[in-house]
Image 1 (cartoon, rainbow, N blue to C red):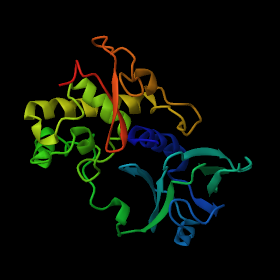
Image 2 (cartoon, rainbow, N blue to C red; image 1 turned 45 degrees about the vertical axis):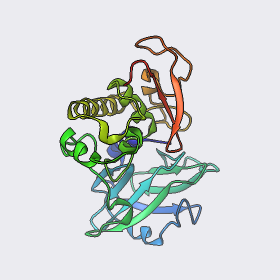
Image 3 (cartoon, one colour; image 1 turned 180 degrees about the vertical axis):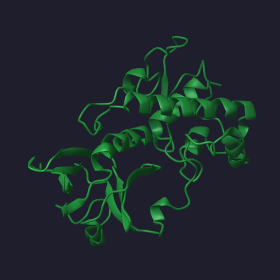
Image 4 (cartoon, rainbow, N blue to C red; image 1 turned 120 degrees about the vertical axis):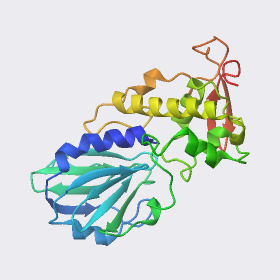
Amino acid sequence: MPELPEVEVSKMGISPHLVGQTIQQLTFRTPKLRWAIPQELKQLEGQVICNISRRAKYLLIETDIGSAIVHLGMSGSLRVLECDFAAGKHDHVDLRLTNGKVLRYHDPRRFGAWLWCEQGESHSVLSNIGPEPLTDDFDADYIAQKANNKRIAVKQFIMENKVVVGIGNIYASESLFNARILPTRPAHSLTLPEWNCLVREIKSVLATAIQQGGTTLKDFAQADGKPGYFAQELNVYGKAQQPCPACGQAIEALKIGQRNTFFCSACQK
């Protein structure tokens, strides 16, 4: 599933091709992805795209009258192509521009979404969510206060969107390893210095992943078709029984909150 860095890379990839361009036509080849595709999106035809932004794992294609909210789901991707490039089996949405380009949404599993948000309004998918992890609003004092009396595992806690958005499974495991904190520790048990270390590692891991183009596992590639490269830098994720890069002990795996979790019990405490 594309995580925050992959979505940020998608935003960076499509923005130069879309911002300032006029939407000529929206084509939907399926009535429903994760949710029904609202026909109000057709109001965007004739509108100029003024900005592409990201909130959590959602992309917002913004115009003066409203925004298309796009979620990539489990296997979604966006490509900027020439308008005469033939659509394939799983190409569900085309946003055609007057400059002869098309933003094409591809999603084999159809777990993604295209939603409508009118200018000046908010959408339920973007309400009641926490701060962005790469902003100053996300710091040790903030998350330590949120963790007060929370007995759930720290890995599950930092993946809660109400706490902080966009720390997905891969980056949670990697950040906890770098901070030398066991993912099974109750969230309330971390000291403020440990939260300082973990926040610093979360920001570092996410920033590095964005810089290197996102993580390629099964489904993700950038808007220009090039894969991400952060998978080459993973220390523990997906490496059960392989030697820990720090101490050589076998990396362990278990499920926390129904998500695969990878760690080194010798290095992480």
